Image (cartoon, rainbow, N blue to C red):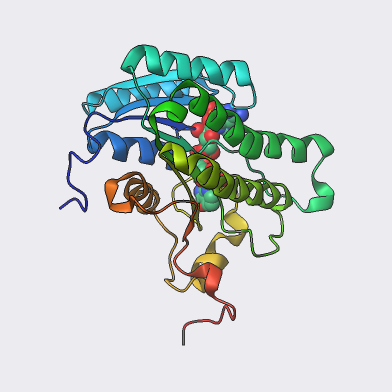
Length: 260
Ligand code: NAP
């Protein structure tokens, strides 16, 4: 039995960056199952096309536009194509991100810049383009996919932690500046999520972190998608500027003790 009514996003249009794989794909699919029409955007056209075909087989309307979120001209084209196809935009999910685990001294200058460019500047680029093209005049919802690093030091994640802290800051600024325009902006910070490329890159720490998490398991992509669905739904109509940690309580576990 689905948690949310199947038509809560009927007639809505959602753009999900990085929507061809992993968490972004599950978010897009969940939106589709609840009535939304979809645009997914990322760099690899073959991956996007395969996901689009999968979604169409599931009965969703889906546009797939190749785009590097670091390039404003490519981002603007995504907005143009979305509006040309669907005539509106209601929801933007900034999910596209890069990651590779490495100690800070082992990250190259270019590697650090690349992650900040994709995660933070990419979020800014797509948010600004969506605001200029549609949301600024009509309102809507933005959800940024972050990570639960802001309050902690995160070994092997200096680049991602810095970028996602910036994303959280941007989330709060958008909430304040764009709230009066009818735009709610929130962020979701997933903990370790199973069956994702993100987590596979962390094989070495996977078992240990899952065992020490208060719920003693990783999260699922569906649990992230359901939180995003809640945030873009009318059930969250007064939620704005929040970073929701969906990490099974790992972020509030100061002692990290084995099961009591
Ligand atoms: P993923 O499958 O690697 O998703 C990243 C997506 O972003 C891919 O579809 C990728 O497609 C796209 N992307 C990367 N660089 C891009 C660029 N320059 N322009 C446009 N698209 C780009 O990883 P995931 O684990 O599902 O991660 C999804 C989100 O969750 C990310 O924001 C990540 O930081 C966050 N997160 C994940 C976890 C986890 O446990 N998995 C935990 C915390 C936070 P292309 O390569 O085709 O461009």
